[in-house]
Image (cartoon, rainbow, N blue to C red; front, side):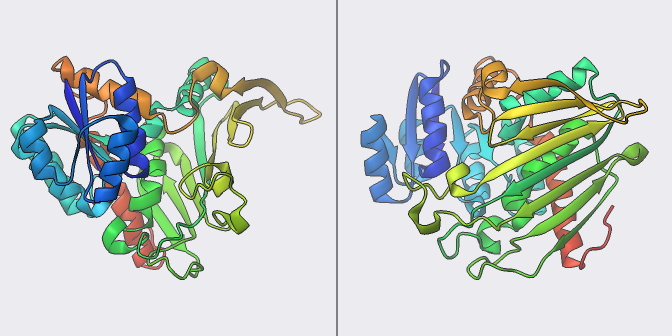
Length: 349
């Protein structure tokens, strides 16, 4: 199978390594508009590189493409691939507007082309571990999911612009919205508010709190916090402004039910499972500590599992495990959260 990755910078290179290291792709190529990136990545990975999508599609003729460009280019690249019948795995968000996202899903469906959005947290070890805990009954009936993301600010002016990203929920928090749907089903309504903007070169909100309500009173909360600066005084060695603890970018996740709670600690990469007791002493008890890496694999951002799952489905002529039509539902609630912020923090159903 011939597979290409369009966009060969940080996430693009991660996807390229996942595809090259997998068992499905027999030939791999990359594409980027920057000549220096093409030269560097082509030499490092020993693969052909192309400087335009048109050349890639005409000369390499991929059967599947992973799109890792800035979100503002997702739609144009996806449409070029659809026009040639090429299967597409697209980085989140599907696009920077709900209208474009809907149009892409509709076009792929009309052409019968496999199309998936990269909500890769669904594949990571944290989710596998949490699913295991929930299935064990340790949490009982689920009532609350909470996610806090600490994010070091990207230092490049223009990187966090509305035109490039679509907004803070499109760029960062659609992952959380998708996870909420994954565990709790469809929300009933949402509310989101933003604190006064702190980071001058951000053109979108930089500190956000949001609540999603589900049936039977269940609740999901998001707290996006940029108080940790990336590469403070060069402390990150080697310098990494994109992801990782050193860059101040990580997530804490907790899921609670009427019987207990499970909390993921990103610093130790463990999940603590606590059972609620109703004894006279009112003490709870820890029933398990899960080493996520050891028991369930890569804690977060497992592109290996995601990319090769998608490609194996395409190669077998099967629809993707998580089709973009499902991801579109997460984009709908992503847009509703953005709408709530625009309204100054009103409930949106």
